[in-house]
Every structure is written in structure tokens, then in C-alpha cells.
Image 1 (cartoon, rainbow, N blue to C red):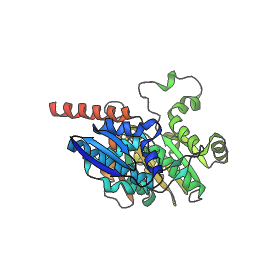
Image 2 (image 1 turned 180 degrees about the vertical axis):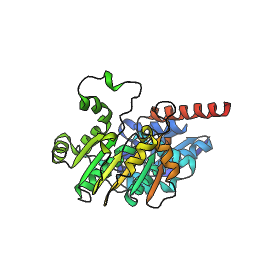
Image 3 (image 1 turned 90 degrees about the vertical axis):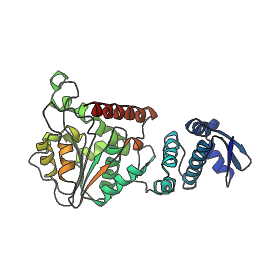
Image 4 (image 1 turned 180 degrees about the horizontal axis):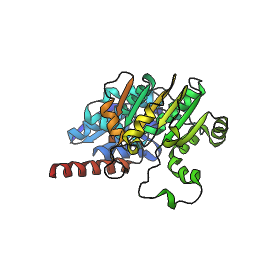
Length: 323
């Protein structure tokens, strides 16, 4: 039986680390396969050597986050453990030191929670066009909307434009009830949800009525030049090559564009090439255009989302080897 000790500076740090009913410590024990006890200002970790060192590194990383004022959650416990496994614990400070992008309508700070998310938000800040590619749950759209809201409130841009292609994922627009706008709204709902979260429904309504925020299908972008705007194209994997070119050439002066998508969830008809996959290849070496790739490690939704993504990735790899 191998044992290591971690010293805690104060009782407040110990309380934050253990969490309500010791839920955080129980999660670390389960994640790392160790036994953890506390004696005064010391935490003792017992188990197999490799597991103990992993748990110790995870605890030390979480203490760094606590000192920076971060609240410990199941998501950042798992992420800190994954950094410890990869030998990247020194980078935990980069995440903890990330600037708050904005405060939601419910008073919660919005900031990057993983290294991939930090690189993504830095890319958006430092480039005119950013293409964010990654699986569901990595915060691609949410973080882009947060940065757009911050830019609008700081008067860096005059309006936010959010758009996505109205491509059916197994359904047909014609079968949906209502007029054209009512048929399209379900496709735009994730964008509305993100804006409601950032601004609150009433504030969003005011901005939208003034024309400061526009949420529309991609087809409505044709023929326009978008100056002084923060433009987000969501679900870009479902654009065609022609649609992607059309969107990117709408960019006007003092504008910023973010393109997000997941190339593993393409709903285009057979034979149609994804405009997102095409753009990543064509634009990768152009100055002021950033390609930001997020992975399953950057998923900040329920733990099972990460496991589902990993399972599908393994299945795709097996199928590629067979073919």
C-alpha cells in the first residue's frame, strides 16, 4: 500500500476541496481508485502508487483553482485529473487565470473551463475570422455568443448577427406547423437560448427590437455586407461549399466572424460536400483566420456526453481500419 500526504493551508480550502457531504473527495476517490482521509490540515491518499500520484496531482491542481477563487465542480475534477494523467498540471493556472468574458442574467461568470476553450476564446479575440471545430458540448457557440455580447455592450460592434443553415436532421420543414418564420425558429432555438442566458429575455427583446441583435437563417445573409458586426455562423458543418463562401464574403469593415461546427454530425444530403470541412482545408494558412480545434476533453456537459463522444470516435476508428 502506497501513501502520500498533501498539506492544506487553511480550513476554508479544505472545506472547498471536500465539498458538500464530501462529494468532491468521493469523486476523486472513484476517478483515481484510491482512499482519501483527512487529519487536521493534512490529506492522506492511499492505494496503488500510480493511482496515488494521480490523485495527489489532481488534489494539488484543485487547490490551485481554489486559491484562484474557482468553485470545484465534478467537471473540473475530471478535467484536472485528465491534465494530471497527461502531465499537464502546470497549465491549470492558465485556466484559473482566464478572464471572465461576461456575467449571465443569473449572475454566473462565463469563462473558459478547459485549455481548448481558452485557446478558442483567445483565437476569437485575436483574429477577424475564427473557425471552431469540435464535438457537441465543448462550448463553441456559447462562448462565441458570450464574446459577442461583451463586444456589443462595450460598443466595439453595433450589432450581433447569429445564423445557421436550416438543414433538416431527419425531419422536413414542410411538415412543421406555422408560417415560414415559425418553421425556421426551431433551428435557431439554440442561438436564442444562449442569448437569453447571457442577457435575459427582456433585454434580448429590447436589443432585437432596436435591430442590435439579429437571429436568422443563413439564406437571409445573401447579398448583404455586414459592417461593425459580430457574426456567428453555427452548425456550419451543414453548409455547402457555396454557402460557406457566400457567408465568409459578407464580412465588412470592423467586423468579426466566428464559424462553429462538428464535422462528425453532417446532415447534408449524400453527395453534398460540407462547407466547413472545405473551409478548414482552404483557409488554414491565411493570416487573421484562426482554425481552433476542440476535442472530447473540452466537453463541459454531463459526463456521459464525453463518454458517448469517445465511444463514437472508437467506433469510427474501427470502421476506418476495416475499410
